[in-house]
Image 1 (cartoon, one colour):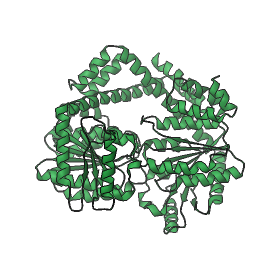
Image 2 (cartoon, each protein chain N blue to C red):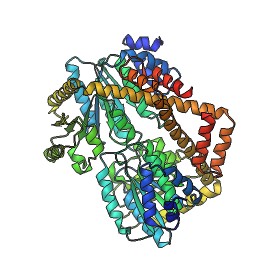
Image 3 (cartoon, one colour):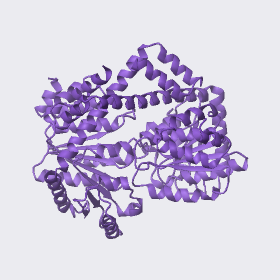
Image 4 (cartoon, rainbow over the protein chains, first blue to last red):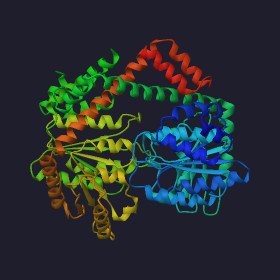
Length: 314
Length: 314
């Protein structure tokens, strides 16, 4: 067994951090690490928190962390710092605020960023969730800004997903597209002390009346919270528990996890295959010549792609 | 030749729209269409416009369109509607505003959305650019919200990229990460009538003094515009021309385009390969069994992925 995996299983915090870094860096021993972590995963409850920038996702993660800690549960928080070059500052600020939990060994917080490379963030995030799961965290909060394919991809791995709306930021029911309806198990109107909170909650409810929810047997509740005074947090935790019970008893939970595992296999196969392709095709001299032909517009890219594939496929 | 390609080359507007729809839907004859369009591409100048939501990208695209039209140039506009479920409303509003050009045959506007499927938007956008290029547009404006891998991917296809900043929305120099510095050929501080515009322009300049620009021979100019009264638009157009001249004379232009063609080939090969993989592996009975093993946690996903790859690779 990899030394770091052994240390993680023994509860060594620094080993967890190190493993996540190796995952982020796509290090050579990553596959071994994940293979060895796998038998120890599947126990944590993964709670997704998404919403537009400024909706208060981090404050909510913070409040939920405090609440669950009082119940004696251990928490992992993964904050996905979007690839956006524009919103980094705010998220950094959020991270700093979360440091009130820094001395609590029962809370492990990690920001996942792009670190120069823009691809692979969703993949790395899902792998980091596994590391925290194997580490024995009871609950893993995954916080993403709800934009882009990667973030929706990440949310698909959550057992329960809450969509956070903020009445102050121009979030309105017209701007909520079908995509978000499909991933929301719970809606949270945060900053509920603000004007427009009740109206927004009513609009979401009205939309749900139109049958836009994802599951005919689960109508996503619309919760109202204020992270300033903690209002609505116990009720939100209760709603999460109810969804969890529903998901387990209805088979949704098992089904989602099975689908996730299948999706993970197909993603991994595609990833390996790409590596193999460029190794094989690269080893043949044909490859560079064909790419050069493309660069010089001697042939269209589609014909060249078919030829490279033929080199690979024999 | 595909009838639609012939009609597009003959200047039929509806054929262009139809081809882009076929591209978006990943229709069966897409490859043939793109293959036949290819020899007619490479002539248009592609101008990328990116920035955070609310920075005024659409107004800017609008002003630039009007300006270039007065010079007799034909324009294509591709507005990439991000996969965000949150910002749809605003972009729809922008689209409606752009309709002042609706009666002008010299302007072709298209929004690219996700239409249910979340993948493939970047790919479809790049292909749509080709269609407008073959259609004979002199300038193609591509507008994206600068979040996520897909959008940065799209911007990589532009000959010149402008990053639009808005002093009113909390954009600040601390929030501009390395990623954006690498793609900006020109910075635009829009809504320059607002408080903080001069400060923001000065901050960007200061950052450029630290040598964060992408090309040692090109220092991105920091332009100030107001789309309300058209201030700064002629200067911005001049800056674009200057960058274009620089790019052509320095070889950057040819180099970028060659790299883009190579990238397109590799993306296309990977896309074909995935199709081939799931065809071949799916035809073998082994495949479903292995995925079922994954779903039931009989084996870890990495071992299963290697086995599926072995089935495919023989």
